[in-house]
Length: 365
Image (cartoon, rainbow, N blue to C red):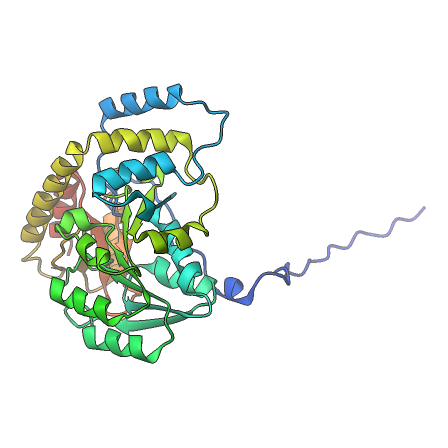
């Protein structure tokens, strides 16, 4: 009996399912690859974990909750705690697992079939969600000093169908903070657009736009527990807005989206906010120390910032990035963004981590 030799046939690459929307196929995944090194300065996190004694309290509260029951439909108990902390009407608070989720929902709320308007460069999730959801994305370049292009934004507001406008204070990824007058001028020009004031880093800059949000039914402040609160691992963000806008936004929030374990931990944090103030003050001191220490670097330029991160402009971002990585320090490249040629974004770490970054930067030739 003769057996035919087996023939290896190369399979053609699998095609995307026809049902996947073209806009989804065309957009690359969120650009982040974790790297395990001793000093992690690439995600704008707090360098400090949640205080150990508060972890104990949070764990005790978690254990006391029934885990076999669904949580509140819309994190109602936690919404009330946030409202009390922020001096806000609970009906105007919307809670989700991270402010990134709220950005997605806000794009669904006001961007699909309409317009997402922001600046350039900006936080990548605004543009990513607009592209994934097929919204019309309009970006107005920042001024050369990274300030808001007030007249350019006002023109874009007039020329495009209403949708959602993102105004970030402090800006990401530059750390720039605009004057209150400039922010107000843009917000008031937006008319009936949904206006999002993203205040993820507001504790570090000392800015607070809640009063401006209160003045309009269509305005919203976006805040997070991931940065100054040091709770990025719990994934909780929230919006402060009018009860009317919150009611529409909540229609898009999946039911039971905040679990009882995260809810218990956040309640403990809100009851003990003093640690946040202490850490914010340390970050501000360290930020000033780093900027002063690197001011006279022969080839790297440290750019002013009012956030818990700053930009280093280098002659060669790839070379600088790889050099720091070899020193056990990971930062975030931003050099592909408009206006940020050669730039690395660096989070403010612990004093020891910042010392290591300063020493490495000074030794670079």
